[in-house]
Length: 144
Image 1 (cartoon, rainbow, N blue to C red):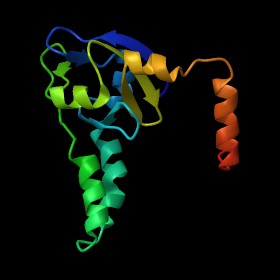
Image 2 (tube, helix red, strand yellow; image 1 turned 135 degrees about the vertical axis):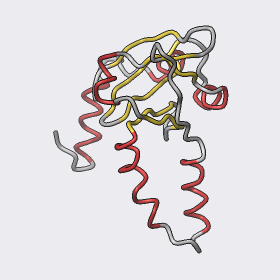
Image 3 (tube, one colour; image 1 turned 90 degrees about the horizontal axis):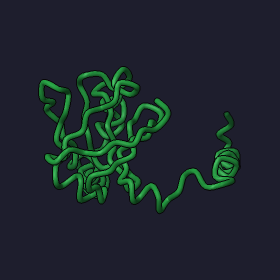
């Protein structure tokens, strides 16, 4: 998944996944807190792959279980209306600082939902950011 789109939530905080992302997300998906200051939307199949390593956490490893719980505890399986809209819960909106305007960013197998204000603060598009990103990935032996 790649690209971005700016969207405004309606008065009931509903979101419709744009068609350019819908084909990859499909009709069955989850939304949850991302590791950055955004929400993640994943197809259920991508989410199953994402959480598979967590299934191997030993029952007596309380710290790892607590960490997994922090991630999985925010998962919501939204119900879409007949127009393909779903409500982003107040809890998830608060976590990501989302009010009305959001930027959807396709990132690998995830659709990230960012507060428009946070995206401006982070400023993904500032000059040199792509070159710096390439350098960071190269430092980690991730060549593309």
